[in-house]
Length: 164
Image 1 (cartoon, rainbow, N blue to C red):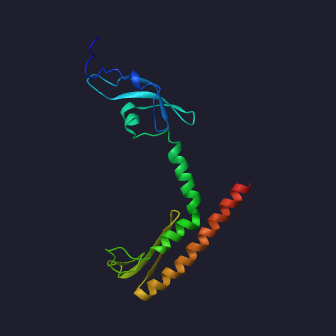
Image 2: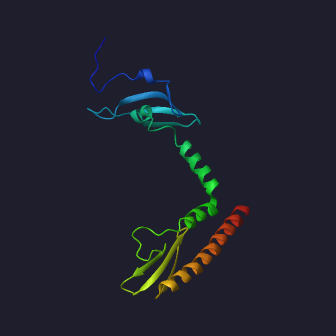
């Protein structure tokens, strides 16, 4: 039996084996001289054929072509929805440990000498300023109502775009 160089091991025994959702169809040569890293050609359970790092597939680091992650994200988004994500954000009303005001989304700007209320939803930033903490709290309540209206408008716009 012929002895192979350390990086020229025979991996043909892995052809046809399934790891996660991927079935190995072939194992390539090392990517470059002195390297142990090599790619393998695989078929996913969904039918997609792709090339991935052999050791990542064999070790379980890569489990599919990506359809598992996409499906998991789709289910999560459907469960959460726009309202679910908004509820989670508003449930955690505690301020962060480094908060100077002690109120979430309200902070003091020393250079301006006033409080700033800042809330970000769907990439849009809602801001207001107040010279007193009580005024900032009142502004925060106004902004939260404005945010609710904005989110409803976004939801209605998406419905109209899907209908057309």
